[in-house]
Amino acid sequence: MFILVNLKTYPCDPVAVAEAVRDVDEKTDARLAVAPQDAHVERVAATGVETWAQHVDPIDHGSNTGHALAESLAEAGAEGTLINHSEKRLKLADIDGSIRAAERAGLETIVCANNPAQIGASAALGPDAVAVEPPELIGTGTPVSQADPDVVEDAVDAADGVDDDVSVLCGAGISTGEDVVSAADLGAEGVLLASGVAKADDPAAALADLVDPL
Ligand code: G3P
Image (cartoon, rainbow, N blue to C red):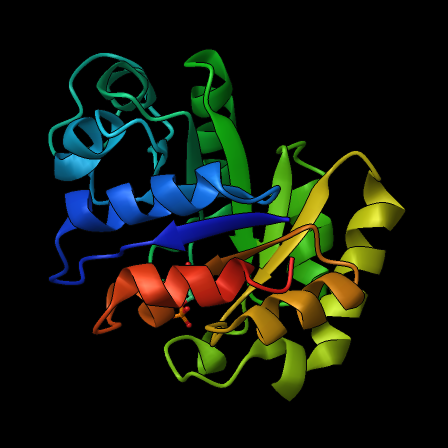
């Protein structure tokens, strides 16, 4: 299982969380990574943890004030990027452009989507993976695998129907090892999660719990 911890703009210590993720990653067969804010990518990557960007723009070097350039994030140490997160929505053409920008910079890609129909459309653009995250469950602590298992299974079917090389992850409300196992049972190859770790009193303990049953 791939477990990607998205730190969003939560006021946690990104380096401390990164070190905890790195330490858990070294002790488990699961693959763990962290997606900090752009400004923290370099410091997080320096811990040795697998580091992801939260977004890249569909741009090249040039006159693009305030944008996130894939090459700059890769140089800072990012190995992959989320695209079209529910909190950073893009139009279809821009999702395509962002995937191409990420590929150009050698970044792995996960395109997020709200529902199975969007998962199918996203898979058709050829990312490495897609992630279904019902927006109404994000940050609630109620896991998508329990509240809406059909959306995960339907997302897996939708992606497989387009391109079975595209991996499917799920996210929203996931915070325990049991949630991760349920996601795997529904066909997901990984999970995205944020508040369960970034807002935990003890992120290291939360991470240990996540991988405990794996
Ligand atoms: O990117 C993962 C995120 O949107 C899920 O958030 O807080 O429900 O784990 P959370």
